[in-house]
Image (cartoon, rainbow, N blue to C red; front, side, top):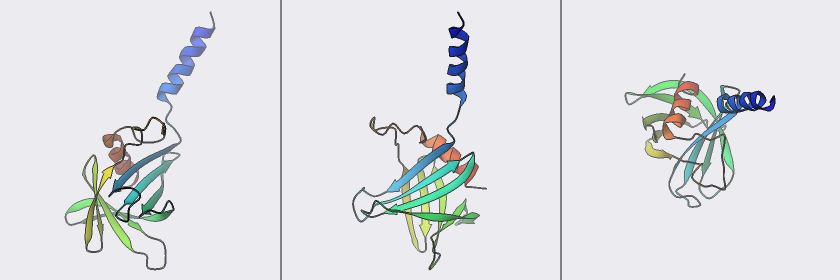
Length: 144
């Protein structure tokens, strides 16, 4: 039977093939309130691609510019800049695998990893499957 080798080849490809696009999301506050914020980190073709920031009740997001690695308050992380005018920057650093500390001027806020795979309707095959995987992506693609 020739179908068995073809099936095994396809199965091996599916198990080892990583998607070309990946996303990890952290958020703070309650969605659809004025206290909500989220940061989505996108990787495309095995390279850092986007940082998307969403806030308040808006469904629109803002693309932040990666501004390089750095250190703030003895913590290693990276900077992200808002678009002009102003070019406000934030510093992003991990506390642990599921929590990021975001320092914005004189304000510090904790963002928690958002598991997009909890909702069976979303079926997010590009999203991180664990907080450790999401933080690993940040370390690999954004911390350098």
